[in-house]
Image 1: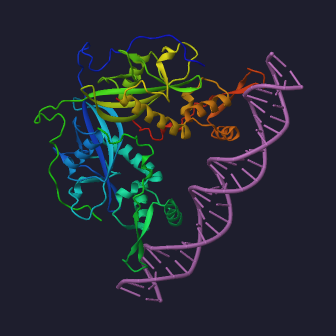
Image 2 (image 1 turned 180 degrees about the horizontal axis):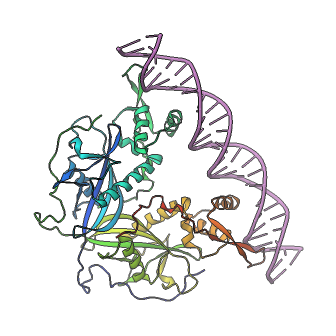
Image 3 (image 1 turned 45 degrees about the horizontal axis):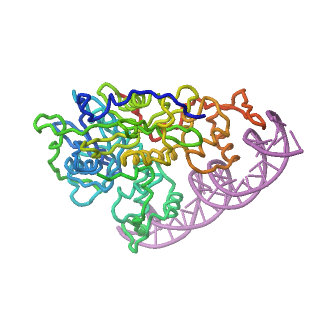
Length: 236
Length: 236
DNA sequence: GCAAAAGTGTTGTGTATACACCCATGG
DNA sequence: CCATGGGTGTATACACAACACTTTTGC
């Protein structure tokens, strides 16, 4: 079944900077980030208040950065937080308050730092209660949650939601919060141990009236995150 | 581990159209599509020649279309072909010939039409031989191939690379071409039958000196493609 | 009658799930 | 001594891979 001969001439009418065609109006490129953390038993999203409205951290890229670096910078500028993981989600074109924007959405994760969280607690919304956000922002968050849940299954990503060392129960709790369902303790432990991403530490944590729990850390192994992330993720 | 109080004020310096900040230079939003087909035993990519160079179909979005519709229109304008499937890949910011562009890349599929393929055969490059393309375009194609291969495994996507009806051998051949490896006939047939995505037709195809082969078609069932594709894929 | 592709089963191996009890500790 | 969470094993079902021969047809 060959693709046979018959040339259609038509391109170039929409070409970029070829001088012949007058320059078009350009959309605003608007990078928005869904920054997650887990705190107080909930999956939360950073939603700073800007001009009275809650919104996702957002901003424009600059020519001198790779796009992923722009996203990271925008997180920092909007929240004062440096995320621990960031990944692009999707790009879409919308109209919002008379602007034409191309929104490039990102998902980012930050560990619940015990020290200086840099963003008031009130500025974190539970992922299940997004009514305060614009429709576009809600859409982006919903999708980010889907992606985050999916990626828990086949990557190390939970790493970026936990402190340096943690117990297996901490890890399981994080999974359960993000997935919003209970997991079987024995199966969970077996799987996560078998996967080899954890290293047991010497220490144990003793708290409460029960056996002390072994602390683990994630192996810095070259990890499984490179699955559906493009090779260039982070060029200029 | 609560996220505690300490507000950092800093956003809004990078905000969009809030009049206070002078308008920044905006990048060109450049949509590029990797349009695949399978022909003559090869996975091929549409690379029309523009101004003497081979390049991926590309163009700018307009305010009145959803972004995915822009991509589809650009395919049509650049190749004369209406693709059968299209999906967004990734967005990145690059400098190419003095322009600052935000490239939004797409993967599209078109069935090898027996009738009027609308693009000269010479304008299709084998996916393994991309030397004629720019570095940025090669990067995009490489990634599209990765995604296409991955998606073969858990979606109906091969549907869009085959004619209406086809034999199991045709289907297997398409998989083998895209994946660039051989598959076991019995396992392949069992899996694909068990998945329930195929419907047997009445007809058989007789060609060559051997038994006639049963023709199948894909079930129009609501399909598995909705996995990692965001819910809004196709809004305004 | 022979070349060429269609079609067809079984077995082993690994992976995911369901499920319940004892142990160490602090108070 | 008791309440709390830490930690452990087994049986079953399912998915996947390896593997070879018979049948139908056109020439």
